[in-house]
Image (cartoon, rainbow, N blue to C red; front, side, top):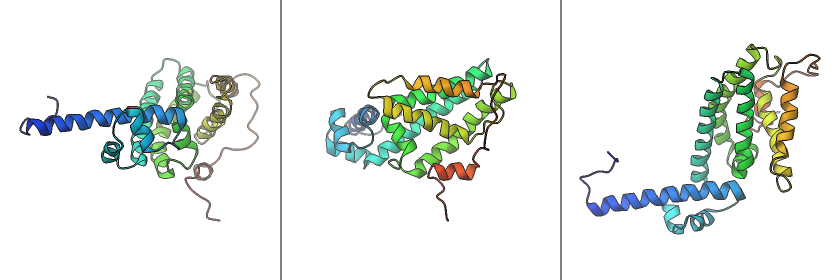
Length: 223
């Protein structure tokens, strides 16, 4: 079954099919435009890229934020699935490495994703909801590598968002010159996280969950 109501008039079914086709074309176009140009584009730009009428795009989605919400949730769900796969990797360290690498590959390929995660453009509630999905999955991958004695034990869950932010800064600023140089800095970070002789002790403790959320703009200081 294709989900089409066979009792509906043929013309109405065709209109629904056309609407769904236009919806998917708009989503594909939004993925491409947001990834290349960021979230500063408007729904008119996306409609033109999709080859659909501007009025059609507004009728399907209402506004640009609705598109951002749907595509961001799609990205986060895909990363959660990957984190769950990384948790089953034969080598816990390689599972952790693959999680960081794939997450940062997604950010490197998608300017819009970086803007949602690290700026106010997409809205903080959207990011908070995404973190509730992704952070527990990423934490499980991290803990598994620590339990195997392969990842430094003093790495905290609150360190992960800041690690992503550090490497994402290299992505953002170096991308016009080199789209891949961020991998050097990820390698430097990973070498500092892997258990080895002579590992330097952390000079300060990790942020608490509340402090990290404040840094991310999710829990503004009340002082």
